[in-house]
View 1: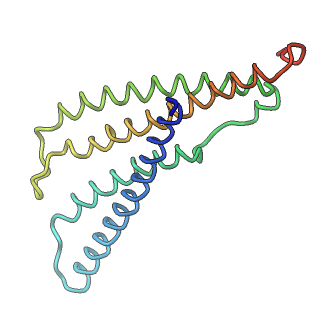
View 2: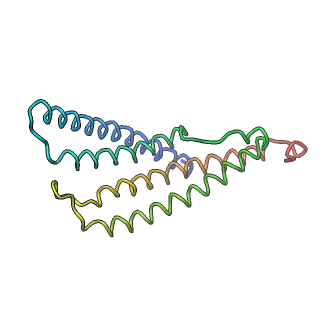
View 3: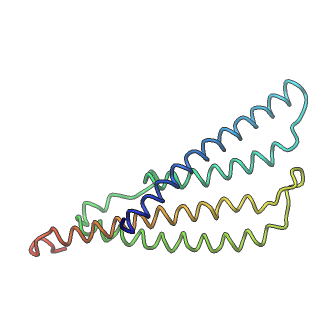
Length: 174
């Protein structure tokens, strides 16, 4: 099995896990918020910990959902330049963008470790859980982004290599 196939397999597996986790987290905070509103206005009783727990669940679901969106390439992307660049220009641009994104996600990973360490000693007052768990979601997302982006970068490099091998020398002018 080639390296590209292994990375793609890991990326696909992580995507399945992220989709399941996102759905469960979103369902969790939706049910919790509904129960909180119901208990407050119908039963005149407040669920005290609901704000802190729903904040944790919401932030985790947002960051995990971002990885799912990225894997599907459903994020914002400017494609108007593709008509001007041609096939090779688009392939080169994809390699550049995925390379820069790899650096960006790597920096997010490194900085999130630093930030989690700094904030770990602060706690949510009602549930007594470290506020660092809010930022662990960034760390986990960065790892998943790195795998997805590596898969995209390797695929772009393979497409560029294939294009160079398939095109006759006369047709390769940019």
